[in-house]
Length: 158
Image (cartoon, rainbow, N blue to C red; front, side, top):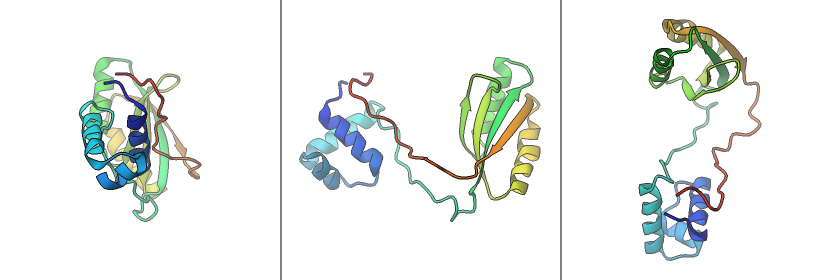
């Protein structure tokens, strides 16, 4: 699928507000509702749009204590990496997890209500993973930017 200017406008509009109705989206991109619906469906089918989510307020949900947890495996192996990647899928506290290069192997963004809850997360949940050699935590003092947006560039991969 080759994206055109209208596809890029649709992606930009949905990235700004995924709750737009088809009619609202059509008005924003200057097209009638039926072609917009067909284009959105094709963008979904082709994987350009992965899913729609609501961005929640961490303060109101009592999980505004955020930490970046850097994990180093005891030994580099596919088995250890797989254990960590599979375990993270079931950790509700982990909002994001990346396999990274550098001094650590994984970096996770953890949402909890307090330092004490983070301590319990590290001891009870991460402590159960025998493949973790060490970890380092950085606590987020304030969010400067958290946009969830991906730059939309013309000529995206097909």
